[in-house]
Amino acid sequence: MVVQTTNYIYVLELKLSNNGGIDAATEQIRAKQYIEPFKADKQKVVALAIELDEKGKGLVDWKEVD
Image 1 (cartoon, one colour):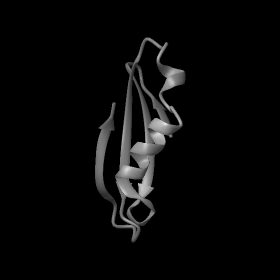
Image 2 (cartoon, one colour):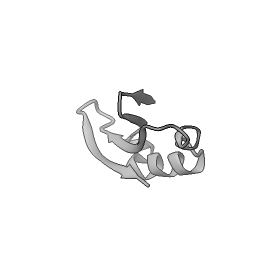
Image 3 (tube, helix red, strand yellow):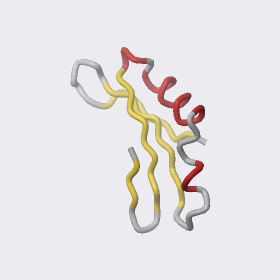
Image 4 (tube, one colour):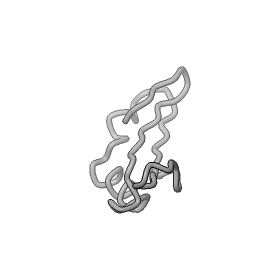
């Protein structure tokens, strides 16, 4: 998912806990080079790996991906 604001572009990868969680989300952002198309933009690009509970209880963890 990509969210663009006035000053930032957020690249988000969401994974359920039972589907690899935050580690799988981080690996997918890096392996598929999701931030590459936005690097030439003047806005700051922030990539976030997000882990959600598979039972619908919400956010488990998140981290910024370099």
